[in-house]
Image (cartoon, rainbow, N blue to C red):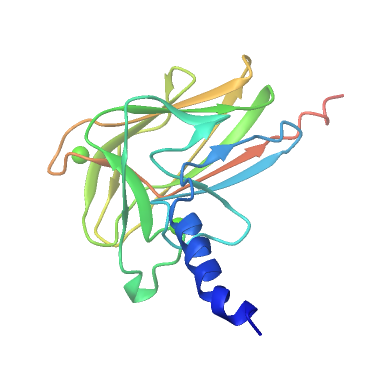
Length: 185
Ligand SMILES: [Ca+2]
Ligand SMILES: [Ca+2]
């Protein structure tokens, strides 16, 4: 029965390997997909099942190509779901670049915070401003939805804060849906 003597050592080594695990997420985009769902936040916050996490360190086919962002996770009290309770934010502009097939894409964003209000947020895509300034009251997660045409194989979306009472823009969620262009006669 000598194997029992050594089982304790094996367990210790396994724990140490898990603690040293790499946490940076590298995303490989399936270019044939016509819908992508992203849940923004820290590496260890709740994630919507089947969705892909984007953190400040996300790399690969989806990455922060300009600027940098921080991430927060709120309590999720008052029924705030796992998509909206966590987010990325910054007081400086940041660009998210996404390798993607050319065509027209509908972009759906939620931009809100369980604990603070945010104001005068702006979203630019492929060099064009998308819609008006976005304001969100405390505990509100307004949708910001727009269509953008991609012709260079990469969707570039810039987030910024244009002033007001709060200095940060904020992003909880992004869904990209390809518009059907096969119905032309
Ligand atoms: Ca989440
Ligand atoms: Ca603001």
